Length: 367
Image 1 (cartoon, rainbow, N blue to C red):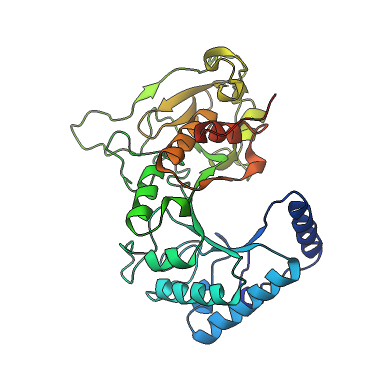
Image 2 (cartoon, rainbow, N blue to C red):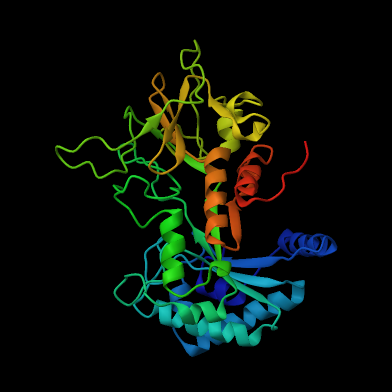
């Protein structure tokens, strides 16, 4: 993650990073695997706009990337600009960002070897035009990029009142306040704008969000006055919510009132318990029940689970193997290139990965 223009233009790595990258490349190549270097990210996109705003800047950034690519024997480069002509984590942005981004990618394509893979991480909708609206035609990007990663997560965060599904599969009930922010809408948007299915990779999260709330339904719905509550809950596969000692979960930052939390931390802290049998039959990876005072609920509108603890006044929106399987099934139905888990360290014994693989129709490791 490169934090300022000069660092971005140099694509610098220091200390143990060089050795780690060399060992990663060597180990991957020994197994017939490929390694891409990602440039940017949520906190590393602050100055992409300025760095690509001139021909000289684009050339300098390209030279730096090519130098790193060659020095480490990489197989590809991923550009994670969050986001062209859109606000992110305090990044600079300009109406010219998207056109400059395309010019930069075209130059990078010319400078890298023909075999190099160039990819990009994107929002769920196409790159923004000068007015900040999604472009209807991104076919020129499709000609220069091998594939894109659709980051279908963080759709709703951890606000105590407005908590909703982190990574919706679809707007299944037709009443979401963000109807274009879900996996199915993302795939359709990019297909309609000029990418092929085999150029799309669906991003799925190994984390969720914990909030302090007493609400009993997700706040991601269009709940107009006089309308019937639109959340659909299924109280299947939930654990014993009357335990004498209710647990309080804490997120990645140590807080319990709001923030991200990894799936395996929900298990490790006792809010979820793995059930090897039950209604999943032999697919034990599918069954995680609520525990420690948490009740597992199912949001049929987004096809995602969520947890609620009445005793601790906490709710958690997250994904589990079952919702991952459904995302994999959707990917297979649309014929996309694949699914990317962000990130593997948050999984619980590969349960999330196995859920995705099952949905994609791929074989599961023998247990």
